[in-house]
Image 1 (cartoon, helix red, strand yellow):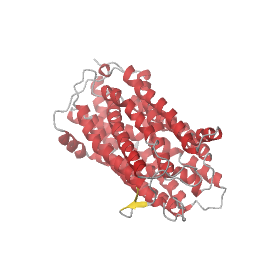
Image 2 (cartoon, rainbow, N blue to C red):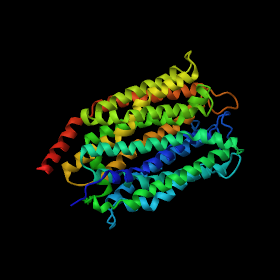
Image 3 (spheres, rainbow, N blue to C red):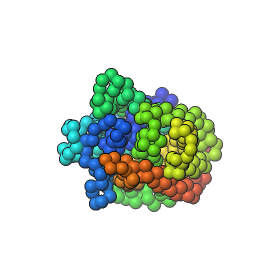
Image 4 (cartoon, rainbow, N blue to C red):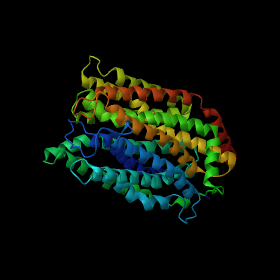
Length: 460
């Protein structure tokens, strides 16, 4: 008989998301800003600049895109190994314990290129540690993500768990968003901009590693999970996942909205400093506004998802985010004070931030439970990896494209152009608009109906 999971255990499980929020903000929000620096940043140029591969790609864009592709390829491999693991301590926790430290360390080492000027050594350094980061991310996060739908089958508890998951991710991201303020304080204490950024990231890494390790020492997986391991090959499991129409629709929708979000996150610092002409430190207030706004909406989003389902909220959130991206493109030159425009946009995106942080994982968990009920086999790892594979391919494309777009219209001696930044908003908005159409055709009532019937049978 499995133990009933407690709120304390759920919180212990979700704490690593704070670390993931920190690391994701470091990579998604600041990597491009750090290695393709604007003149306002004061950061020296450390890697080769300009479009240097096939007349399309920048060094940092290509390296990060390859990292995402490597991450995507390793996802199903790790998932297959994890799903079939016979470790006496469970299929997921042993992976998480083994790879927590290298996951955190590689996030920091990405920003520690050894030479003070651009060159092949720094290019290679960044490639090695970005690629290593994504591999260790997979080795920790694929088992971590697979564990939650195994431990919790009740729909109400599951939505609550994903709300906690998202809450920790967002608060970790919020701390990451304060980076420019921390950097400013350290620069005022006499450090160079380069060293200031590295000191802040080193502190984040220590905090992150500690939190990654918490569930590995506090959760006994076998108390909550008794899984039926798949006996077929990894390839057959993947074929099975992609034969599930609900899985395909939800995955494509999340691919599109995730790609649009990648455009936004990669360029947010440029939107603040280059497009609106504000100081770097002003980004803290702007991002804090969007975070606080989204956190205020967490409770109503949680309640509405339980009452009305997740699909209507996902569709409406993608519509709002599409409009926000178009405003970036067409509204940058509107005759309003720059700070007013920035804060207005921050408030506007609070709703999609709340929905898109909470509900995608919970929506996918519904599809996984639906499949487990229909076929009687736990394939959480492979389903999660298949979804991750597809969405990371999209993110890879975004990361390749964004640096190449941002140089459009750049003045001589500059790395970033206003026209290119506007184009990123247009492209990101168009991608998110397609996500609206995809989520609209998802048959959520059919999925939740099967799950409800199964729960009623179990309670009889």
